[in-house]
Length: 135
Image (cartoon, rainbow, N blue to C red):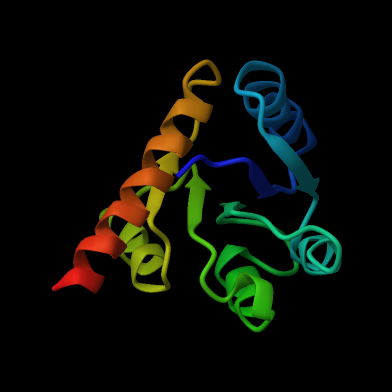
């Protein structure tokens, strides 16, 4: 299963620019970038992502709150989510995974390999789901 459409939610404009270069210019994905949770919620009315890349710490609505709100939308109830954060204590990472994330990527990230990393996480998520369904 090939990943194509990604919703990226990040309040830091410089990181949004780097992620866009990494995922659009280098990896060739279709990307919608949002500057916060409210923007993400409004964007999914006309863009159904196959994966959500979500900053953990944002002003206003943080990553966990944004995920909670996105999960209320039918088109995002089962969309795999990857959190991105500079704060990567094990307890916080576990909190993101417990909230339904398939992975947590640490900032700073490698822009040259971010697309490949997300593709691998996406494929592994669906392989694991297929294994669970077949048991």
